[in-house]
Length: 322
Image (tube, rainbow, N blue to C red; front, side, top):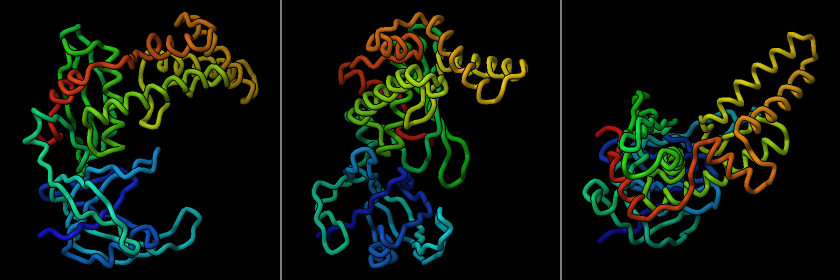
């Protein structure tokens, strides 16, 4: 008989690697620390990502053993001392909760389902973000049949660089591959797992924020806003040109003897003017945003068939250590 397992939300997306991966976590006493202390050493808990945008608890996480716990005092951002609970944790396995119930201050699930995504990879492809922190990625285009996407980051235990790579040539186009690259990073950071569903959600979120960055950069005459999303900065022809023009114009204005604020303001205006001309962007707001996304940033958020997303994820290894 399985007893209900405690569910511990994490907001930073950091999960221990299954099958023995170890991390040390810090929990504020009023936000889970007391419950964790009451659970005690040697017990298993299910750590699941808390999705910041919706404040929902993602149902898939890592069953983790509490190896050790100890109180500690740290300084908060305001300089005041804060009581926290430190915990040494060891990852066991991916698992999913199906229902939740609250008992006192604890959240429990009576129906945890253990999952082996490696064995399910062909039927239900996924990429795991547990045990490492995705830091970025890049898309290399050598032709329609040779489009490779690389995601890279750092191992949580060793700090060493790790990476994942897949060949998507013949499956998607260059702009779609670039969009998938950014969306996969976002999915891994947000959900700790990239599945067809989290990939689709992340593509929509990423595209919305990229479009907003185009509109805001034009509206507020701030080229440095181009390509900025919650998952990081997007490197593309438009943002690269923006950085080049802005730096060149700013330095030129300073050398011409203009004041700092005036130099920056004029550099921003000139940069946005040159960008809209170089990229041949219309002044019609809705169309302009789409042009900026597709023509300027090399992104294409056109929905693909679910089978295509499954094939895309299936071409990546499940984790960077494979």
